[in-house]
Length: 445
Ligand code: AMP
Ligand code: GLY
Image 1 (cartoon, helix red, strand yellow):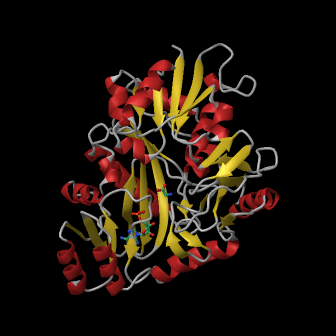
Image 2 (tube, rainbow, N blue to C red):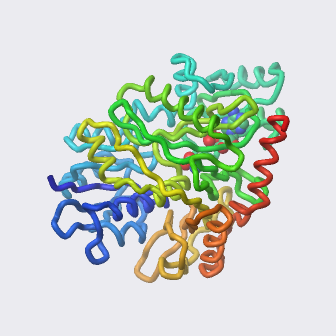
């Protein structure tokens, strides 16, 4: 059967998905396009912004509103899509998977109801409690903001304030870290959130474990550590993620095999509790002195984490998609024993006051040994321009984190950083050592 794959989304994560599909046997590029010579498979893409990296790989790129079900389904039908891959959370929340399914097109991505595991943090916590999923911090949900403020006054310890809905990773405030209790209450009163979660502040190191889920079965990828804070040394506001690294094994340098296995068992309990979930289940964990606890689940690949995971995936990604569509378990996944370091270049002022419109000078050729992933840039007739979101990422893949970091840095030096900001500390030996020391201290070693 001929497969027409439709990729939905135009960020760095989706560029990484496009690359993984380009590497797929049936889609192996003929010329500059991911189209098989024998016509077994073809790749189409759509997003709100024209991502030049994806546009180069796909045989067609359509600019459309990916949260508009009618527009997406129309385009999917126009290109005779047999499988759709949904990258970002917003189309999942908009029910794009449901609408595609109604039109008879398989979507690798959860339906709106299942995506609530990400899109509704109050639901997510109650779901964990109800199904006895291990690793759930103590929490309460509130729709009365005065009651929430009272709870903060009465609670013995630090709390984390989480708006229940999607905020692009930027709505969470950690009392005792980013804000004081007074500032936290002010934040709650000044924002117009309908519902919030207040939960126990977890102390430890953050790790991401992503699972490929289909037909009740799942396969996990090596752990990745993202860096949420905007500035070096983990200072400044939360962002969508400034960069990330993974090691040449499933674990990270501060993580034991037992920690990884425990994270996987939490994912297993979650997959079991979800009814026929499909797509990526992303677990973000706090590695505490008592083992991994769940910070959140996402219903999709992480961005940047997809750029750590997919370049080392040796299994044909199209085989994963067709197995899911055909009612099978995902194939056993093979990952190369390589470390990866990903660094995002973001517009100056991101995330609070980003300045769009800088011309992006980097190209896949000038990136040298590093992999270049375009993100929220816009390709116009006279060049590629930044928007107000993350611009592009450079990824080094090597035998060690140190070598991978150097590859990413060399490419950044060539790319230039005019109008851009980069966290150079990500993946550097100093910062990795700080993580190791932190975990050792927490474990009393
Ligand atoms: P989220 O949007 O849920 O990913 O949260 C953003 C960031 O807030 C996370 O990456 C953590 O750094 C922090 N965070 C969220 N929940 C907690 C928690 N329970 N304890 C400590 N930090 C947290
Ligand atoms: N890297 C965090 C996220 O994708 O939500």
